[in-house]
Structure formats: structure tokens, C-alpha cells
Length: 102
Length: 169
Image (cartoon, rainbow over all chains, first blue to last red):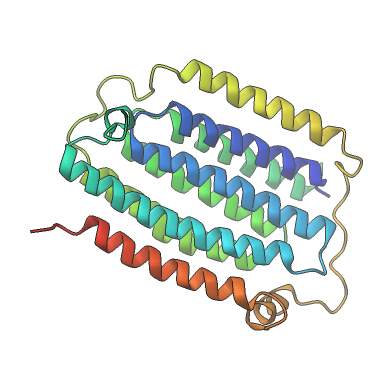
């Protein structure tokens, strides 16, 4: 029998790896990949809490569905933005996209 | 260790190693391929959590749509930064320290929680999680409104993605 702690520690580790990717990567596409890892870690947590603490309830699963939908929307808009920036500025390096810096 | 624990352990290690390679691989195409492996490992954990629907949705949405979209985006934006030079920015040691500190903090908080190591309870008798979920998503006194909002969000994201990436004359 797998205790709840294993899932929570796994999700925490996955989240931290994703956070490291978001903070350390140069390429904007790679930053989005880190965000996907973090969203997955959150989903593992939601499903694990549903299964262990409230298996008769629905809230955890419904929330995970919303995370799926938001992740799909986020990645579609994010990648469209990156491709649009690439067309105009010829770069996808996050530190070179600084038009909003004063 | 019983067989389920061994399966969990193998796939958790595979997922974490793949995730680490996603954020450290030099070539972004390799990163995207490691991302597929990491997402697949998470799908296996959903199966271990008796959430078969989420495992299927994970394979369909994340691996089938999102990961392929990533590969497209990598290939469409591949003129500079092509596997040359460091893929990490200058502050990556700080980011690594922050990630380790966050993990240690989470570990500390979680391990002081009383039901941290609780065993898996049996599913309540007669409950069908999947059909309950489906009914709750379309029932007006449960999650109908968030469900409709999610569909509006997806339409808005689709229109927005097309508009943003349109080539204007």
C-alpha cells in the first residue's frame, strides 16, 4: 500500500524541478515547459488528496479537470505569443524580449 | 515492498529524472521529448491513484496535444540558440538554491502534518467515480458553471492564439 506521503513528496519534487526550469531557462519555450511540469505536480496533488481524503467527493477531480483546461489554453496562447514575438524580434530568449522595460 | 510500491517507485524515479532532463537538456527538441516521458510517468501515477480517466486524459491532452505543440513551437523558433552556448541564464545557481529551499520547506511542513503517511482508504462501496464526475460537471447545483467557464476559456484561448499569431498585412 502506497502512503499519501509518497505522492506528496513526488509532487513537491516535480514542482521544484519545474520551478527551477522556469527560473533558469533562457528560451521562452523551455520556460513554458517548466510551467507544464508545475501544473502536472499540482494535478498529482489534487488527485492524491481526492483519493486519500475524500474518495466519495468530486471536488478534487473537478478541480483537476479545470487545471487541464487552463493548461491547454495557457500553452496555446503562450506558444502563439512566442511565435509572434519570434516573427517580430527574431529571438525567443526571454532576457532579450524587453520592450516593456523602461 | 509490495508490487504497487515498486511500480510507484520505478515510475516516480523515471518521471523525476525525465523532468530534470527537461529543464537541463541542451537541445530543446530533446527537452520536449523528455517532457513526453515525464508526462507519461505522471499518467502512470494517475492509474495507481484509481483515476483511469485522468490517465487517459493526460495521454490525450498533455502528450497528444500539448507536447506536440511544444515540438512544433521549438521547430518554428529554431534559428538562434540552436544547441549552442548555455541554455541557462546567469542566475541559475540562485534558481537552484530557491528550488531546493522550497522543497525542503514543503518537506518540513508536510512531515509535521498528522495524516502525512496515511494509508489509502478503500473506495466507498457502490461509488462510480467517473460517472459521478460526469454528472457533477453537468449538474446545475454542482460544477456546471465552472465547466461552462472552462469551455468559454478554451474558445477565447483558441481565438486569441489565432489572432496573436496572425500575420498582419
